[in-house]
Image (cartoon, rainbow, N blue to C red):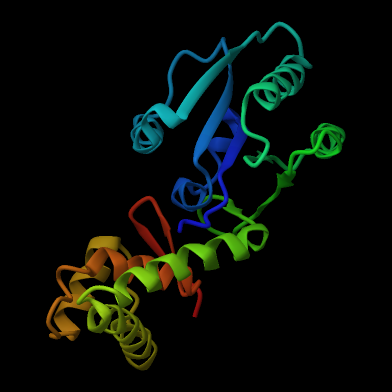
Length: 226
């Protein structure tokens, strides 16, 4: 049974531009982006990433005439969604603005789990989401994945993914090599690991390295945390 928590994210467009969207995808089911109507164009790469969520992504146009318009629209939208959506669905506002805390408290008081998720500044690249909010959720997803592979014929493949990731970290540290682009890192992994299935699971190996917090992907750039 899928024990994944359903979560709706509410975010201002200016904040969305500053984060790594791949991390956000891992912990949200729907996203509502509030964007000022004066903005006439959105970066193609961001649009392409948002499209991964399909109908689960909504753009909400907000009047730019008032400096309070976005905050008021956020409160109205969340109140509206609270009235119509199942109470088990969690709401989250991605923002470093403390003024949203009253709204978060109100939604919680009304009986729905709600949180404000902060981002952390990085020395290089975009901000990163504070994933400590979602450790239980991420573990649940991992447990689901583990139970699925135990009932199939892919248990060895899962072990291979973990083993390949660890071997890659060791080789990178020992050699001092740091492939700067994602494509170069993938080639490095394939070149130095000849086990069966490595090519088929290269994306999962990269994701596993990210989950271990050994690397971060910013567009096509690889940032190493070791």
